[in-house]
Length: 602
Image 1 (tube, one colour):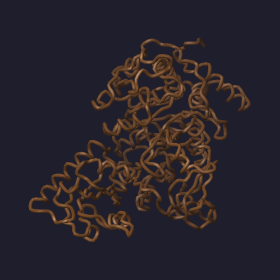
Image 2 (cartoon, helix red, strand yellow; image 1 turned 90 degrees about the vertical axis):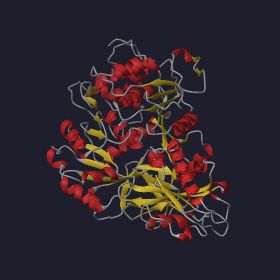
Image 3 (cartoon, helix red, strand yellow; image 1 turned 180 degrees about the horizontal axis):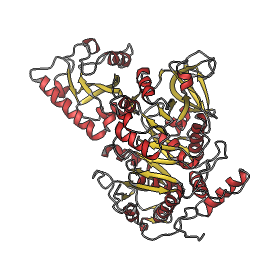
Image 4 (cartoon, one colour; image 1 turned 90 degrees about the horizontal axis):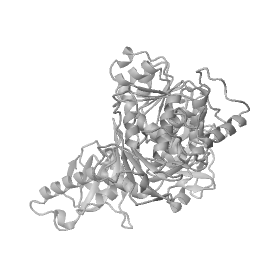
């Protein structure tokens, strides 16, 4: 094999890491027969690039990635990654951060692997972020490069990437360079447009950069155990450990797994189990090419022999509708993993009736933990209702009191987690990192208890976090966006249970005096119309600053908030009423005394 073989992404550093891996496993690489040989779940820590290189060496002709009509073997995917690494090398140094703001696509996957191969750090950004949110993330993480779609909002940095932008490894400007990536522009059935966009016209060797397993690999977004959203630092070791622990928890020992990714690739689960985990074990990753529909789901399962997938509760509900399951051969599907919000037993039972050969696996976790913590198997679910399962192999779970002392089985307290998948810390947030990391343990901010057999039961949250459509939302972030409007003096956001989304957001605002009349007095004539106009302005303001899942469904103006004896807003009263009140109904007057209420729905 020549140094610049177009099918090789194995630079000298990768080959060295691979040799160390094979030596530690006590043997030479097997002869390529086209069969997949999985990585051992207890193999020593490697980097994600060397793990991927190992799988590509073992079975180069095995299917690796499918996105619509584009199907890449491990050899082909390796070649794409190598060429993109070569093209991006002049722009990216080891340790740099590179933001990916792309939808679920082969382009995202190839660039993800290419960035990691350069020793850089991937910063996944949701494609649904508003321009304001995107700007905030870029300021927080300071990436040297932003890879996004051409239709990115004009408010995003517009400086084109060029190799001359870097001198001596130092960025020429604080704003990131931008490469606009055409997604799924594949008239020739290949990633030609991606290559052209990144300047990968000529084939070349990727730079020889040795990657430290303990170095940061990904900065994942989180609403945080405490406080406003931030970025979680996960190392190569942590991501691989989480992926292997997941496989071990399901008893997966072979390398023939076909995973269907239907949620956005910036999700924590995709960055471990479905992306890192599949390429580590030599599996096949299939991407949903469009919105989630039961018919599209069934077609992909049948066509590619999908064995596992992750669904959020709203998707599970869709699978209970219609007769879609009768139109497809679904015998290959063995596991549907779900989590993020409570799912009724009725929905689970109806899916199991339709798909008797499929095991529904409930999980609990959080981004800071890598993200998987527990697994609830079908054999235990009916005997232990309400439990989210037991800890994954290699992960410890304990319940702590207010002084961080260990509580015995049956006692409720804060859930703490320890294991190789736990984050290094929050990016550029040492004080907040120290608040949640203690003696090797992660304080989750969740309340729960353990039974005598180690099964975990959740009991609520210490943090102000909602889960909307499977995504965590910081109530403090929403409140900060509301109060940024000049007409809003104070704001409170709360959670209301929703039959479709799981949880939705409602908000109350106390408007500034000039927005509705004199403070503390009933509004004058015409003031209600003025309030309605202001509330509509606030809703439009939120659309510009918050993603769709973060926006309150209903905003209500109040003259005053209920207060505690110390003068603080009594959140518990508002939260209780928001859970008990049906969506769209007015909040009872006792939550806002002396108030002439005005509410507007988004």
